Every structure is written in C-alpha cells, then in structure tokens.
Length: 81
Image 1 (cartoon, rainbow, N blue to C red):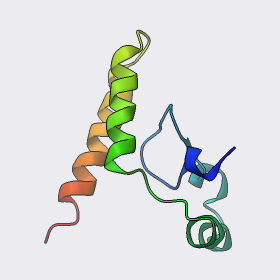
Image 2: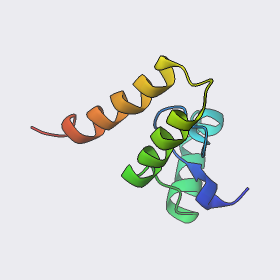
Image 3: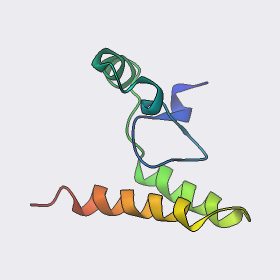
C-alpha cells in the first residue's frame, strides 16, 4: 500500500485507508506516519472523490454519506472561533 492511498483520521472512507484506526494507541506511530511519511488527514479532494464514489455505488448507505458530510462540516466550521 502506498502512502498516497492512506489518511490519518477522518470519516470511514472506501477509496483510502484510515490507518489511524490501526495505530492510534501510540503517539510514536502518529509521528512516524504523519511527520516522516507525510500521511495527512483527508483533504477536500479526498472527501469530494469519496462522495462521488458513494453516489455511484448502489450499496451506499445514508450513514456513509452522513459521516463524510459531518466531517466536512466539522473541518470547515469546527475550527472557527
């Protein structure tokens, strides 16, 4: 698996693997993956591609779509003060 196929955190995605789910218990892993390998949180581009993929998939659930939109809302408005 390539680092470009991974993200750290965010909603459940079908197009990229959220490796935080596997390594969140140890901060050394976060430093390794994020700082050294350059794995980031899902970008807007990642999220839009995910929504396009979910729209095209007949088995997509409302919960999957809601999770992406909730993350986008948190990402855009959650940091405003």
